[in-house]
Image 1 (tube, rainbow, N blue to C red):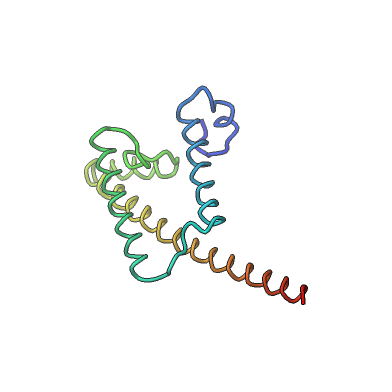
Image 2: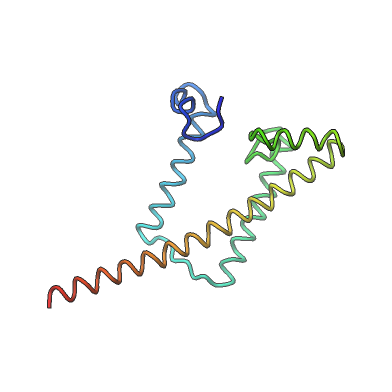
Amino acid sequence: MSNVIYSSERINTFFTDYLSFHTVFFHNIVIFALFLVLALDLHKPSGSRSEVIFVLIFGAVFVSLAASASHILQTNYSNFLYSTVGIIKTLTENMKLAIGEVPTKIVYTSTLAVLHILLLVITDYLFMAFCVIKEKILAKIKAQSSTETV
């Protein structure tokens, strides 16, 4: 089965396969929540250093919990136990042959943890950029509507 969120297999097995249901439903809910937060002004990013530090701390806590739970419970939370991406699978299998299983797990988990945190920081900056763009558009609309009424 394809690992793409919106693949035809995921959509066709939406009600019969838990992984397909989770993949489609959960990710759509997350995207919808992001749009709601942006549209309803539920969070106005400050762009301050403390916000970035908060995102980094949140990311570190999430990564620690997800990676630990994955290995303890042998469940693939956020792909920390094993990769579902073909090229990464091949890479980790080749690394296991070259340097052994434990060093490969350490390198794979550490790299994935850094990528998760980096993705959170990038998402935070993109969210800040969207908020700035939205404010500029709203200010332009407000200015146009006030000049039209005069």
